[in-house]
Image (cartoon, rainbow, N blue to C red; front, side, top):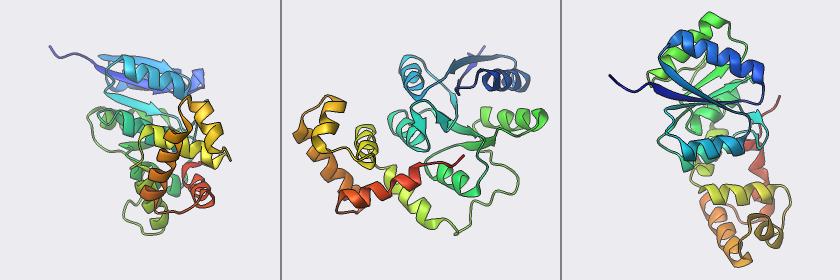
Length: 213
């Protein structure tokens, strides 16, 4: 007898987590479900437990866009991640897929469609909404930028996020509790990986991490 799949629902809305949990149980009754409500608690749970599938909201405390997805894919590459979001823009779906998402589940899906989507994801297969076109070149600049962001380590992603908020090296070092020389090394490596030359250009990358309402 095989062990049940372990699924983590990361969303800050309790009612929606309950709805997802109900749909998961309908899709596969023999399943182990865990829940978190912030990026911080999600990262901690991923460190503590073996998770087969993470259902990740893009808007919750500590995670406002794609940086959380990028960080999780970098830090826990063995975990399958599917985005569950109220945002149904094709651009966001393309960005999430480029960042390594196995699927993209709109929160507006009716229950039967939600169960069908989750059933597919639980087997390790991709699922994106009907009408989504993965081959479009409309957002190629976005995809190229996401691919570059995905090469950053989790710590480099944290440093970049603080750069985009206007933090100086000394402030970033204090925030992350490391030496300023360490931050300077990270900044140099970030610039190299992103193909940029200054902090203004780095800040422009924030547009590829943000997700509109």
